[in-house]
Image (cartoon, rainbow, N blue to C red; front, side, top):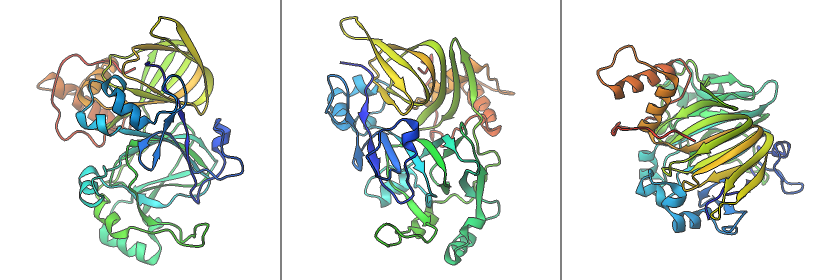
Length: 389
């Protein structure tokens, strides 16, 4: 019953989309514009349906309800059992997306009918020669100045633009005003949420000739004007293994995201604490696992494929030459301890072991090596950390 799950993509048509996801390997609706492919989603605005194996035809929402911890993991909260915690997307920014911001959990719970907030991260799959991302306001910009610039249409002058290329990664915590500019394909890992506050949409009109709604007051409420990242792009913390290169990009309250590069054959294991996802962004190969009868099953992997690996799938191997984005729900303290141990990170001074590795990760984050925001409100717990798979 437990095997790598594939899904029928949920395609979204927005005015800024194009056809570039076909270049990544997605089979797009003929002659139609596609802005986003929701690869793995249990959000009501686009629920994934399983496409392979005995569970084919069942929605991810129903699969979570029926299989619960055997699918999702023993380490997840009870809340996550009823609301699949992540949403995996591929985004084709043929044109510019709106300048926007997302609320945190508290604000969304108060003003968006119990919806969660939205923290996300971007991985640049492909980029044109002049590709840019927008992330945050420039130093010295406050709410009043930004509101005035929105009123007179000059807000772009107050935003930080970042040149990007394939392989770049950026963390987008709630409260960070942001935008994806044109000529980019992005893999986005985010909370299972769909609340966006648009602040500027280039005065353009949709296919019906109407301007899209803006959400100025809510956006001004949630934008963090104190945030000014000097090194917004994530370099990554590198772990080299046999035939596998891990580049750890984000570890925050909600998810752990890695870039995995496989050259040859690599074995992975899972302790049952959580599921993980894989999105292939380059190369080809295969994934193999043993079924309940002990038979070895193998499936091909190509660019554009996304899989959910259930928590109860204890082992699998990947063979080939592939680059993938892996995500899983965060077990923050355990993940931080595992990462600090593997990389031999040490803080300058520490009264105890936990503060040692957390301080060391903070130091790595200050150098742009990893993104940690938003961290859990409080850190608690100890013990041996399970290795991410």
